[in-house]
Length: 377
Ligand SMILES: [Fe+2]
Image (cartoon, rainbow, N blue to C red; front, top):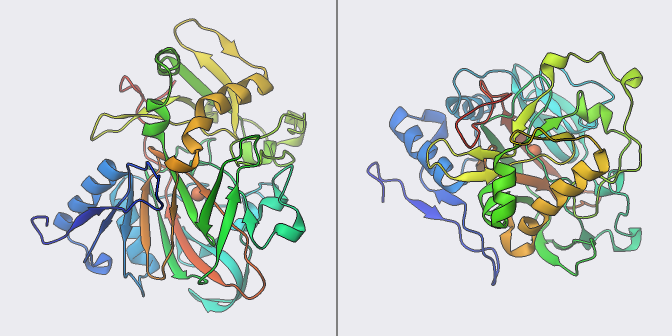
């Protein structure tokens, strides 16, 4: 029991054989009336455990969700993808902004008559069929699924990745589970709750590297593409959701909005936890464009090589034993450290299964911390 009577409990292992070492639940938090002392407990838990689950938040207002999320970075206030999302972006169809609270988005699936002052919402849960090169055959679609897209919440152009994202479950369809198949040449699979959000740890991802790879990633940066979600909008993803195939489908400069070189993002491959000092391998495979080794000066410009290098480094850490698939219950508010974990949407709903969530995050006031406390180049 903490000093204020709150209990921070590590999450139970989601299945026998799970090796997850992150995630915690805190009971008894009143998000609507949060004191500084209570926030300090949540903040400490987030930097220690990476994913924090606050149960029983039914009725949580968008305002309170926003205020809690912003406390992690008070100088931030702009939604992570900016004021508007270009219609050509792959994200455009997934997000509906809460009126008067532009940092909060409504996401989910199905028809909702009224929510947050909006009428007749028709929400669509991203289906991997729209994004993967080799989707699950239609006849298996009800029972078998894929990780949709492993990612860091971020625009990766102009704006820096939010420190924290919050996800609130207002309505959750009940009862079904699905088999998540990797379909990547391994025979790995995972039994998951319908519509789970899956998390993996960047710290584990770093720890799983060989000593040689650790030394190399510590001195390397990733440069991200300009207007990445438009640039890659025609590309198809691997079946395990970890990056794209290189079929030459990226848009060229003439098909993109004007590019401002100063807005291109370059981040170290390794991000340091500002509280614990732990090192996380944090690369976002889909918008990655180049790799730069700061020690040798070598720049890897060939897109296929860039992607295959990142894939080789990341793939071990998405194996089932390292994945935490959250089993959503209505009223759950989940906060995650977006500079320490990657996450993926999962699953496919059938007609009549309504899911209603709110997501909140803000572009960070500073880039992520590098391994030597540098912040960017
Ligand atoms: Fe996300």
